[in-house]
Image (cartoon, rainbow, N blue to C red):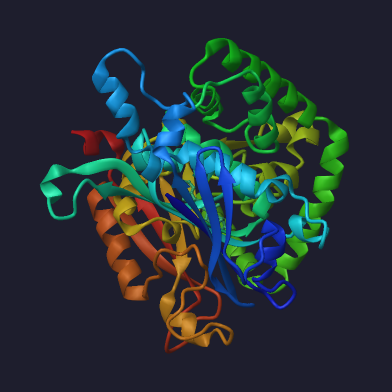
Length: 487
Ligand code: SAH
């Protein structure tokens, strides 16, 4: 059973800082004994550019059972045998979570005595768990991690690669990526969500588990769209504890709405916005092109799908032609930042009535998205794995069916013009693909054809005679009315 955490370095923060944060020296492998076996920490790679720490847990199945904490339910002799012969040693993610909190306890708390400033630094992180038991499969894995701002890859592990006809096991290969996370946050997500996915806690849940859950869930569990499932599974479905936790989470949520804290976050957001926009005037040009296309379509009620941190919503709010603006994103973290950027809680009533932020995934049809004049997908499609694109296509063009749809995406041909981009690289670590103009046109025309829309193409940014513009935009307009389509 193992897990790896990888970070890449920047000039100010070399990747080897991971060793300081974990309080484990990159140059030696170390072993720690835990109540269930031995935990090893080692670094398969460690230089300034890339550093990976691996946590490997060797579970002693017999000790596990002897401690009376195995899963066997007593009674029939088979049950006794089953408690020795089970998958715990190889995969129990709840044990992995316990080991994480034991071996990396300071890192989880965000404490680093040697370098006190380090824990608060967000850094690129990538976490891999090659075999994670996941009741609920890849779909649940996404529902748990995506709202926290992780880019999730969750692939079912086949029962036996030699016999694909046997189907998939209950394991998934999990990969989480984020460009800017603190390690403490990441460890706290794993500490709670690994056992939630396993859904088979190996030890009796006592009431101090509620405290542990609330401590580890601080800052992200209150308001998580799956908060109920997480709480109930984490507490092994003991209703009294679950109720107690739910009530306390509600109190936390109310306390968080307190103004005093928002001020601080506002300043942080402001600082972030500045650094974010300075090198990318293209983002501004994109918003201008989108706004112009929306205005010429005559749209008043607009969806911003995959709204991210709310920059476009903010820009659209300034124009009274837009009477209702709805931002939707799968990432709760992005939405929290968006709502702070927009100062939603301090907006006058009339302004507030014009704007709404929703958490949701474009991979599913969503009735809340019906009945709008226009939908914008700005730099969103390339964040989805290609096989999931048809689901988004159906949710937007088949189900929501606004009169106008704007889709922007990078033009990969232009990448040779970016001086800082090494040849053959995509622009952003989260991009699953980047298309040429021909590829984008082919996709857009096929989508338009399938759903009764017409498609036109608009360049955004300088239109290079050879490689085209940096951003390409498709403007879809409904040509077949709904009734005709349904018939
Ligand atoms: N539209 C913004 C943000 C683009 S980044 C802009 O132009 O700046 C892509 C955004 O899509 C991210 O915020 C990401 O969380 C969101 N996203 C990715 N997959 C999604 C999905 N399946 N459903 C909804 N949003 C998704």
